[in-house]
Image (tube, rainbow, N blue to C red; front, side, top):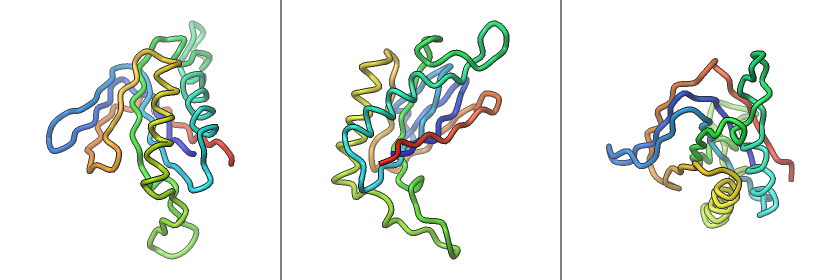
Length: 147
């Protein structure tokens, strides 16, 4: 599993022109699931996301996590994150898990994150979503859980 984790001052997801999820200060995570991923990957990625130190402490150093600041987490499934882009000018998607494998693992990730953090919002799996955000910093990290 991979996630593009972005520190935000606000983020939201809309489907069919209706907002379905939003957070204020916290992180937006775009999440990709690969064919070899399992529940243990979802659990480990959730733990890393909520405890990753990307918020400033009193000295201005990145020493605080979402848990520490009580921030929100907005999770959005995005299969294109795990596309094969090594050659050519068109991505290949054989490196992404099929929806019937990816959806339960994404849901497991959501449940694990909710268990660890109070404010977890979620996009709609497989939907055509419009994601809005204000990246704070900008601060963006690529997290992966090796399989």
